[in-house]
Length: 128
Image 1 (cartoon, rainbow, N blue to C red):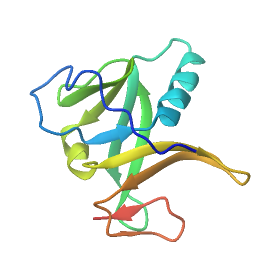
Image 2: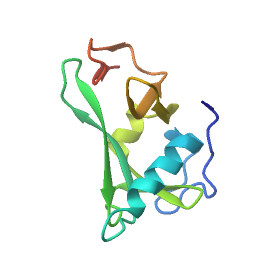
Image 3: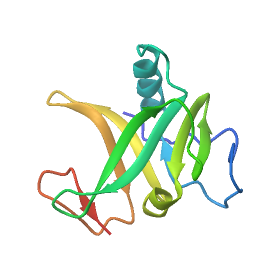
Image 4: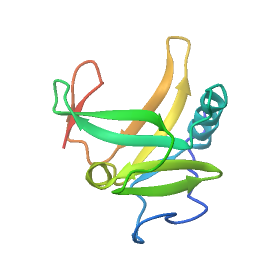
């Protein structure tokens, strides 16, 4: 499976410009999100990627569909997919890559984050 990332076609759609985007999505992740979004009724405006407190290591990643961006969100475009990231989550997502992986055992979104210092045994939470 390819691990290449797709850079946003527009740096920041709303909000102040930033020098680096907080998160990258691989082509496989973009395709899967678009596939899931197309089956929703009504079709959401975009994908929210965030970091929330919780789990046995302190933080967990979150992904959800949104109909619009929030006041404190930056909006990034990957092809024609809008990704909403709030300011707090952006701090924890710098240089993070989201991939979609399918194996014989499981399928799902995988976060690869260089800032993570440790993860829990089940792999669903992390600390920085």
